[in-house]
Amino acid sequence: MSETHWVDWNKNTQSKDYRGSGSFSTFIIIGPVCFFLGILFAQFPYDFPLLWTSEPAQAAYYDFLEAHVKFLHASPPTISRILNIVIFVGLLGFFMKLFRPAESNVLFDGASLILYVIGVGVYTSNIVKGMRTITAGIWDMENFAGIKHDGPVSGEVVLGREDTMKVLSASNTILAMVLVGVLVLQAGQWYAESKEKDDFSKGEKKDKKNGGQQQQPQQVEDKKSQ
Image 1: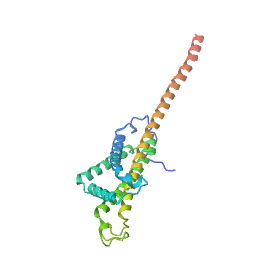
Image 2: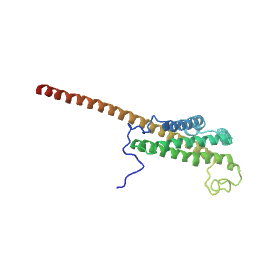
Image 3: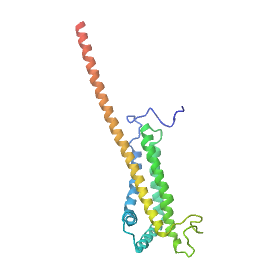
Image 4: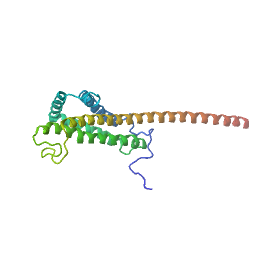
């Protein structure tokens, strides 16, 4: 059986070079995750009428939501650059924690990285693509049939306007759930470390107690021999 050389199996939560829940790398993971969750929370009032209520949304609401999405997509390039920088900061935090990782890093941070990458995929493939489709306004073209179109989405299946906005709202919800999963895993790592630390301190106290009890009979035997 081949060994996993990139994992430091001798490292544990008590090691000096262990990068756990209290490290700086954890901070630059949680920071971007909370940043994006804040953006999604600000978007939630726009998604609520489409997904979280049984009453059908009116046509005027779709016009309002379309104008809102177009406004977001027309943001200055600085906004998109800041978003990309924040995404890469989160990835940097994962790479820092997974450099010569301990077993705890592989379990918690490895799973967190998988969720984070899934979130990036949802953002690029669903959210950005949906915003581009809405901004293109292909539903207003005369030859739009909802199947294929020769334009910015050439050769792709294009949904109707209402369905596209529902998919965009659902993608926001999926992304929020994925990011919450990252926070749950990081919190689980903190809990596991705290339990291991408590068990380690209890073991040390027990060893000291047993060591003291073993020394007392030895002292009695020394006195008798004198």
